[in-house]
Image (cartoon, rainbow, N blue to C red; front, side, top):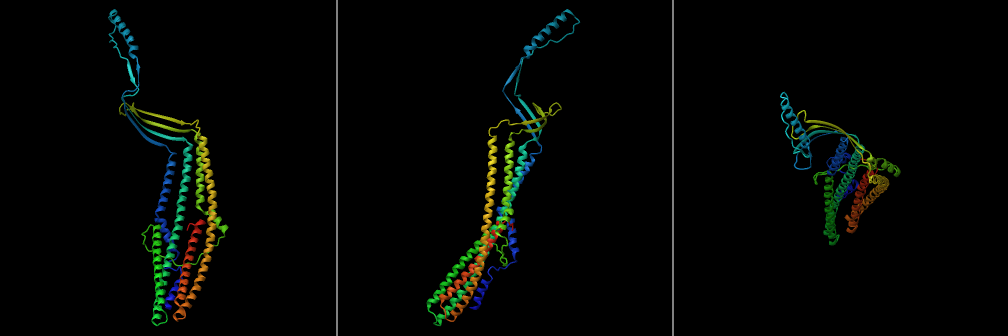
Length: 461
């Protein structure tokens, strides 16, 4: 019996001690989560997409080369008549008459063939067949939209990069909490497992006392009931361990039942920052505020983009290719053409409204930044005092378990000598178990709160 008590008290005295290799165990798990977490991989893909959009914006500054080809077959359509017959046939008739008269009057007059009568011509606007094949180069010379779009995409890419950092920090916090939750569940399971040994020993002692006519049968039944109660508590603790294990492995993108290595206990870390210093560090280090600065830059660029919509755009265009009714590539079929193309929107009644909308969007972001600044200050303040209270809870739980340990030793000694009844022993054992649970909860709750405080002030680990 004394060995079992010593085992239980040893467990209480070293709550939080695990087999492992220290803090580097948790660091390795954090690294695994950052490499394998599926949601983080999705965030990285969004960032890569923003970089591709930025490359697209950069490409708009360079010339574009394209091959354009068209072959058309047409029927009908508009046409116009050229009265060439009506104009030239009288002339030809006079020439033929003059030639005939000269030949009759002068035998030496040369023989000139008669001019034939010609028909009027009808020309169609659409030729039956037509082709145009050309290479076109377009070079932007003046286009403020391209410049502002590039700046917008630059700032958006930086903001998207910070989104990845924000999720990484949230993931680190979640992995820490899941790890500590598993450790808390594991320790609770160990606590009830050792408590089960005590109540089994109590049942054996009660049966022995009953056989020696020192206690009545109801004491044995009460001890057996205690055994059933602790077994139920142990089953619940086992379930909590499995659920916590599955969630932790889920964050690391591993099989749900992969064993988790627990680190050795470390001294309780105390915060040396004052609340004001913690808030100041958070306002300087929180990447969410930096992200809003990039979004404000995007808003500035958008305002400038809307303002500059009234400016013209100028492009250089160069074409070289072949035209004709059929495909032929002779020296008389090719052509070349260079152009300066300007487009200028001289009047747009929506211009002022669009500029005003862009300015309002920027004002909204400024208010959002002010609100985030206040929320971060409140978050740090709350985390700081939660951590302070958690430290006091650890001290209180440590003192309580020491007192419960002494009380249990005394009652157990009286019970084994027949000077205390089972109710007193049960109360002492319950108080000792509860004190152990409180210490487990207090220690790991403090670890949770420390992780939340570190996240609040902007620590990346």
